[in-house]
Amino acid sequence: MPLYRLFRYLIVTLFFITALGLFVFRNEIDISALEAWLAAQPTIAPILFIVLYAILVPLFFPSILLALMGGALFGPLWGTLYNEISAVLGATVCFVLARYLSAGWIERNLPANLRFLKQGVDKEGGRFVLMVRLIPWMPYALLNYALGATGIRLTSLISITALCIFPRVVAYTYIGHAGHMALAGKETVGQLLLLVPLGLAVIFLPYLILKVSHNLKG
Image 1 (cartoon, rainbow, N blue to C red):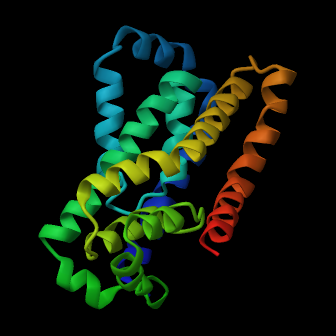
Image 2: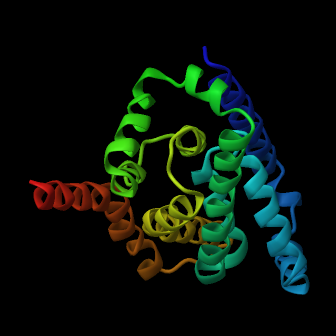
């Protein structure tokens, strides 16, 4: 098993153990106290979250879980902003580490299904990265590391990443927010119904964009 998968499974296991513990002892957790602390720390709390997010992404922690956490903690508006900044920053960290510290090692150890990246970027540049970034099942951190071993510029990576992940960031943030509201007993029918189009957008929007791009190319 590749090292990155082993490390990722370990982190996800620890996350779910923590989540289980929070669920078991949920009656002893004062959610209002957490909300009050977040409200009292309008600067420190977002910075801590962004730094933690940017550190965990290169460690192969699932970005979806982090985005859900951002929505639960900061709500749909600020949560979207903080999640977007954090995800782009995490992608940048992966890219820089790969480009300047371990590009040769990463290129030699890339999974077979990602070795097409270098050829694709060399041939089509940012257009190819745009199409690959829209594929929702691509491992986020691994893709960022892999792109660091290609010839794409950092500025292109940042701009393409910010554009392509935004719809998913919005959806995941709102889902996290709605989940938090549901646990707190504050959800409304309208809020829950909004999850349906958001979920469909996350699933089908990338396919639609890729289809249009393919037709334009043809």
